[in-house]
Length: 287
Image (cartoon, rainbow, N blue to C red; front, side):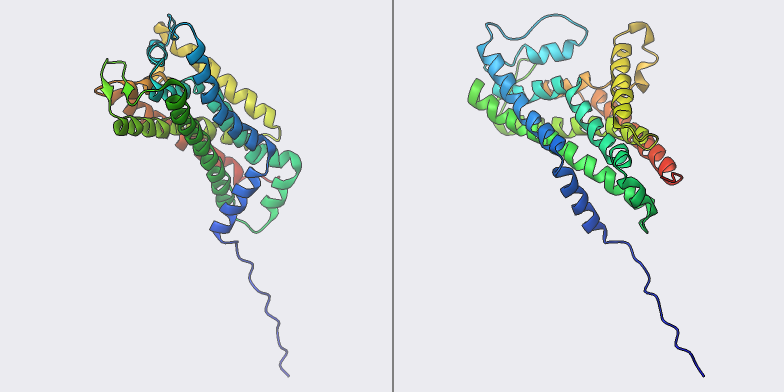
């Protein structure tokens, strides 16, 4: 007498596109996400108004001469406003935004109890980390793109101009100016992704998002200080913040590419290191 054996259907992972869309919707519903995107849109407007009402264009000394050079040509030069704002935001605002989303991705869910359920579910941990990293990357790109786009509009409306006056004294046509701004948007995004990758690695080691914020931003501040100490020039090539001031080269004509290329390579190395450490930790994490 044969006995029918019931077959238990195999449990399969959800389609990757469904997971990515769910992660984006989940991040978008967070109030912090909307606040961060709102701040990204407001900063260029506030900066444009501030420059327009100032009695003189921003100028002065300081360690970051490239940034000062960009600031000095913002007045009546609207297409430089997004360059000025992106460089200004790289000092703290954009790293803070990327770090905040990375902290929420792992530590935030661990603190709320959601990460443990995800780790116990039949979902690959590599896929889980990829989905989280994708969400952080998309919203980071969105924040930088919003800041650049609003900066272009605010610059043209508030400050005027139909081209970009460069730090070299030449004026780029409108189309080429937009190309420079788009290039800067990509370069800034890569740098923020590098910070976010390190924050994501730290996020896999703790259940406290504030620890991720304090450690990552503390490191950014320390690295920024070290980059202005000339006696430590041997250390500068490995500091994540070393190439940030070189991003101002997009406002030069012709545009130097050596320092920008070094910055891209450095950011790529930090992205690889950060995600590798995050993966090594999350595959061994038990809750």
